[in-house]
Image (cartoon, rainbow, N blue to C red; front, side, top):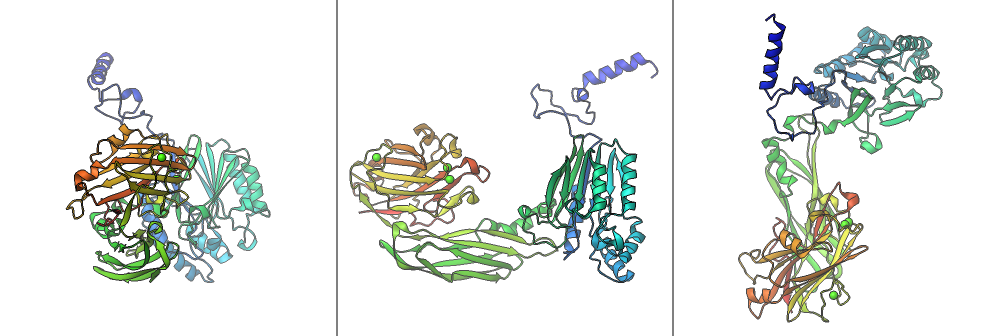
Length: 614
Ligand SMILES: [Ca+2]
Ligand SMILES: [Ca+2]
Ligand SMILES: [Ca+2]
């Protein structure tokens, strides 16, 4: 094929006859059959610049070490597949006086590191080289304590911060001279990355370091250290100084905000410099994060079904005492530790008040919880008892324990009298004709996003319900830290009113129920579009926005109840939910706070929300 014209024609033929080839993007590895003008992607500037460097870092492993962490880090580094791994020292505990003892420690460390699939670069810490003998052992294994390498035009300068007299903290003049020579040799590298154990930039007496810092001035440079077991990122004179947390070193593990956590740092050197992603070791999982086997073990607890409580049911206008039945089923093949702490409403005691026990594999436990009021409490004021539960599956194979937690609410419930209205009701969104004796400061259910409800100041409500010859009424006033009425559907505040006019003993009392969505910016059309069940003809409602929530009045024609139960209708089931969206808490999202368990919820019970005509 020596004819260049033939070759050109052949190429042209190949390009024109295969729309799959996206040669115009210069992405010869990318092929597709999408030929439409609109594309199912944003653009094709694929992030695959061969100049990119992607490496990982580990931090301190000594000082009260947890040796299982390094093994875990090695597994997780292999999952992440960096090009290589850097470190900032303190690999072994040190503090031994013989070469043999030190070598035993190194052998253990190297054994744990052996599974790492990519190169690992050693930068020594005070536990590794902080005494002359330790330094001697280190050099026998690793040759030098400070060194450099250049990779893809980036200078990696690895220093030793235990290079003072007698191997105390400091950087010797010899090492300063070395750094100076290296920096002069590579004045124009794309970036300079410095790795050292101690963050000497915070040490005013670190003379050797000060000289190196002066040499770094004006360079595109990032400096990494460890030692403090406490993450801190600082900026000084255009240089980033990053102090990593731990990878197995002593730590209270209080979490990212306190800087105490086990980590891998993932560093990508781009054309604009390094981008650092701090990955919590506990946040990296392999593909078997959840398998059918694990799902069957944890799901009953995760969904809350393994722990159940019965409601405390009574009759009368005040509550004084009752019993709830708590049942915990462990269907897994290992014992679980269960802790339960009760959050009690004012004036309520529970015995026992807390529970801490181990439930054997494939077994269950049952316990009676005696609930008493220190003085009779009006039914309309009663809030549920909240049981905060924690279930721990202890670690089986040197991986973190699985801790699940959640809440169960014990409802204290009685049928309520349904009264005639005290004075005529006008459906105008103004509740001045109403008293609102029902107070909901602790919901029975927090729907959608349980963590999104921060307590009564976030969302609570009061309501009342009554009837006259023409209508059955509901009036609600919400209290909200952040009223929001300009969203869409769930992304704004509104009330959910569920009504069931079925007669007593009805086989399926949900069959005749309907749900109204009522909010200041929710139109009747919107309400009927999203509501469930057949809304009876003639329902009227009005809402009014307030600075701290909203008010709702709704009237349902009494014919609805008469049709289902006859002229002599006797009862109605009611539930009310306050759907609260707060713009400043969009992360944890919308919550629906239900007065009684939602009728479809597993926590529902037949007597929930029953009103008997008075
Ligand atoms: Ca009114
Ligand atoms: Ca709120
Ligand atoms: Ca709100």
